[in-house]
Image 1 (cartoon, rainbow, N blue to C red):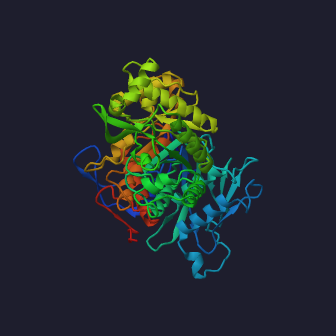
Image 2: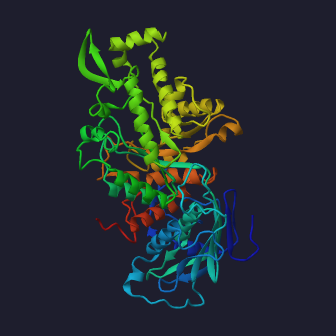
Image 3: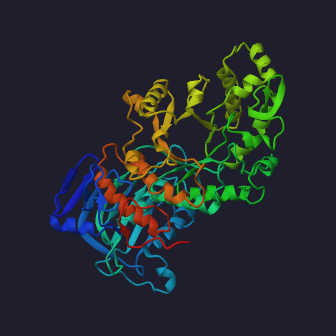
Length: 564
C-alpha cells in the first residue's frame, strides 16, 4: 500500500513502504518519550545503538499506520478533546468524559489547573481531537463484554484530529493511541505528526490474572494495574480472588468465609463496596472483571468458615484432623455452592465466571471411607477423576442456572467432563509442545480456548526475558483455519507466592506489555529489535504516568520515576 503524497510513510501489518527521506528518520528519533542510550542486541552478545523505530513509540502496534513528516503543535491552553457533532455519545457519557480528562492530564499534566486561559489555536497548532461514536448504541451505560467492538479509526490533520469508533470501547483504545503519537522536544513543547490509523485487536480476549489470595493486594495496587492494562490495551482482569491461603472476598451471604478465612477479617478483605469500585474503575477503561472461585481443590481457606464443606482426611481408620478438597458427596455442598454463585452472579456483571477445576489432589478422597462407599455406589471403581467430574458437572449446572457462562482450567476438559458448547477452556500446563498439542485437541473438539502457559510472569530469570513472552503465539499449533478461529486470545498470569504490593508492578510491567502486543497486533509483527525500541519508549511513558515499570536494559528516561 502506498500514499501518493510526498513525505508520507504508510505502514500496514503486511508491509512497510517509506517514501520520506532521511529527515523523517531524524524526526522519528525525537518521538521518543525516553532516551535509551544503548541496549544489548537481542540476538547476539554485542551491544548495539538503538536507531529508533519507524513506528515511534506506538505500543501495541496498530494494524495500519500512515505517518507524515508534517507536524502540529499542541498547547495546553488551546487543545481540547470534544464529542464530535453527530456522535451517539454526548456529555452524559461518563466513560468518554472521564477518558477525556484522563488523557488531557497524561498529555499536559496539571497545566489546566495552573490558571492557563483558553486561547485560539495558532495556524500550526492542532486545536481539537473530535471523538465520534458512529453506531446508534454507544454502550456508554454498559459493561464491556466478550464480543465488544474495540475498533477505531484515527485521523490527525488540521484543523482538528478525528477519532471514529462504533462503540466507546474503540474510542478508549483510540485515545490511548492518540496520546502515544504526541511527543515533546527538549523544552517540553508538545507536537504530533499528521497521521492516519486504522486499528482493531487480533484477539478478543487479552487478559491479566492477579492472585489476591497468596498475598492480599491493596485496592490502590489493583487500580494501578488496571490503569497500566488500559495503557497496553488489555481488556480482561481475571481476578483470582480466593485460594488455599486466604479468602479475602467478603460475601454478603456467607460473611464467615472471610471472617475466618482471610488473613485479617477487617484489613485484608475486599468489601462489597471495594469490589463495586474496582469493577467500575475497570469499566471506565474498557476492562472486564472476571472473578475466579476455584473448586474443588484450592479451597483450604473456604473450610475455615464453612463447616463440613471440605472432605475429612483419614489416617487408617480414623480422621487425621486435616482436610482435602470440597466434599463432593454431600447435598449441603451443592446447597452452599448454589447460594454462593447466585451472589457472585449478582455482584460481578460480566457474562462469565472462572470456575477453576485444576490441581485436585485425590489422596484425601481415597483415604475417606464415606467417599469409598460413594464411589462403589456410583460404579466409579478406583477412578477418582470420575468423582471430580461428578462434582464439576453439578457445579456447572448450578452456574448455568445463574445465566452465566463459564471458564475452566484445562484439566476439566482433559478429564472428560460434559461441557456446554460455549465453555471457554484455559490452557496453562506443559512445555511448548504439550500446550500446542492441548490447543489443537481442544479446538478439534469444537471448544473455544485461550492460552497462558508461556505467560506466567511470576517465573523470572536474569536478562531480557520479555523476548520469549513476545515470541509466543496462541496460533502456533497444528490445526485448520477453523480451529484457529476458536482461539480467543490469552492471559498473562501473576501468581502470588512471591509477589505482593511491593514488587507486583515492576515485575508485571513492561513484561506484560510484550504479551499485550502479541494479543493485539497482527500475527506478522515479530521484529524483536523494532519491538525493543518501541517498548523502551513505551516503558518510559508508563513511568512518566506513575507506573513502576522496570527497565529493559541500561538506559534512562527523560522523566524518571520519582517514588511515592
